[in-house]
Amino acid sequence: MDELLEPREFDITMDPYNHMIRVVFTRWKPFLLRAIYFDEVSSFSSFANGLPISQKVLSENLRALEADGLITRTVLPETPPKVEYRLTESGRSLMPLLDMVYDWGWHDMKRKGMPIDRLGEMWHGYRERDWKQMRAPYKKKRS
Amino acid sequence: MDELLEPREFDITMDPYNHMIRVVFTRWKPFLLRAIYFDEVSSFSSFANGLPISQKVLSENLRALEADGLITRTVLPETPPKVEYRLTESGRSLMPLLDMVYDWGWHDMKRKGMPIDRLGEMWHGYRERDWKQMRAPYKKKRS
DNA sequence: CAGTATCCTTAGGGATACTG
DNA sequence: CAGTATCCCTAAGGATACTG
Image (cartoon, rainbow over all chains, first blue to last red; front, side, top):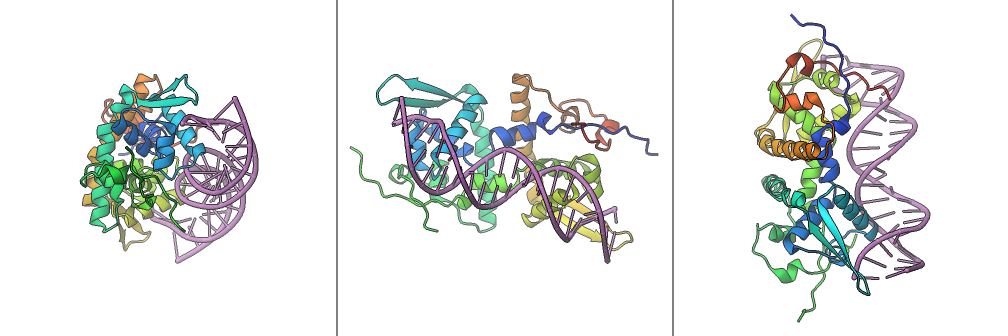
């Protein structure tokens, strides 16, 4: 009953899942997009202070998000220089999806009894917001 | 006006985004979950034939999905052995989210004029399904 | 303030051969 | 059929120092 099937080629760069993993689902990008969304406009140092991310990786990620059209980068001609990051319309349209991703992950972790970061819960509305805590700078976890 | 803020610690393993990236958003997992969903029950060889994935990586991914409670693995006592992979309730609950991810990626790629894999479009209902093509075995793309 | 520049580590994936 | 076992490669991220 089976017919002979011609083999087909496959190029993973043409797949939307792969596209999304590259453009959105890397370690820090959801944090960065979220933070810009909440603040409307963010600065380089706001990320550097609020997350345990190196300046190099932060810079790379912001450039990638800009290249992929999710954020804009505006340099203000001051001294010292000031740079503003904002979401594009495309970036904003991603927020409901990020919400669903966080929500599924949150419930999965709860179900498995895994500890969940309190600050992240506040940012996402799963816990009453305390801006003092949410704005606290990051401190390295002692290994 | 700013008060002094106590630094806070951060452990990324406690974050739901990071959890989702680890559990779901790696190269092949969305394909595997999708395929099992469509077929109800899948075999090891169905993946190995239909995707350009090595047996080692396929095995690792299936074990991980099982360990994370998204799929079940059932060994039938035959010779040669037959193994059946099915979605758990948790795995099934992920499908609407995967749909949204694919959809956002699909529209983003369209907007940017990027080519999109026809077979994937068929699997996801963005193009009329042709099962002959969808069941065709994978053939290496000549580099 | 907002980054570069170097150097290094690691997880995920790939190629190929072999087995109960 | 459904996998292991090896060995290898690369991209993402991290540590630290320096700069316009």
